[in-house]
Image 1 (tube, helix red, strand yellow):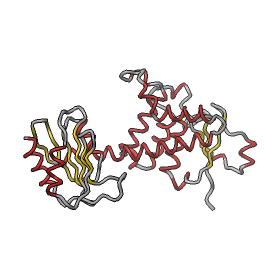
Image 2 (cartoon, rainbow, N blue to C red):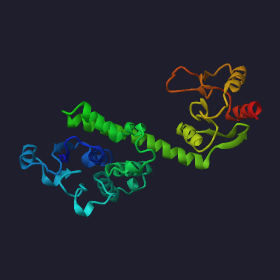
Image 3 (cartoon, helix red, strand yellow):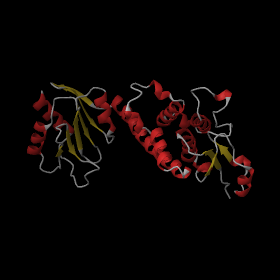
Image 4 (cartoon, one colour):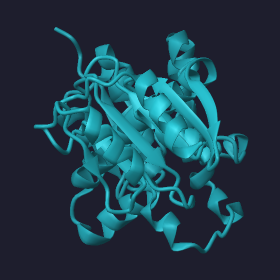
Length: 291
């Protein structure tokens, strides 16, 4: 029978404590997939009474962000701003699983957790801007303010946030790789354009952040097309919408009132039909209408 591991963190867990638990339970499933999490006062370790009650082997107890042990940075020798509990857990797991050390999404998460655990946001641009209140560590604090009686619910909320962030980051890093090797670029009067065949929708925002005025993405599996214009451009897609409708009687198209989005296929709309128009045909229309 497999022994059950125990993870110990402090009450009212912050992003760093939650991050350590997340790494153990998500990326060391064999040993920590069914681990039980205990909560103690900051700096404390699990009491002998609790250990006896739970019939735990001391070797199976891992203190994270508390206890001043291997995975707690609240010691003189680990006081560097480049170290936190999450980074210590990541370093440990990466030594066992080399692929984790190459995971760019994980690197991004660990770097962010380390930075905010040392109040690195004080050096961010417009540090007082309210936009930062929507970041994970602040939302976890909001959970604490709304529900001060449940460490477990706060932990689960933070774990879900990190799951979501990891999925987003994996997709974004993949988008970077795709843009570095794929896509057709061309120019119109309004500016630089990109046309690309990929199922990764993050390439649209990333390409626009990098300066593309117009981005056309065709999904190779679904056949659907999404066309977007930067919101700071004077260009609209009305002419393209009318031209497409005159040529495509099969696909379902939605023209956004802003004039900046022309959508054929969205997870928000399950009944849309993909366009039979090829990416090359749409590129030709754009060049003809907006040259």
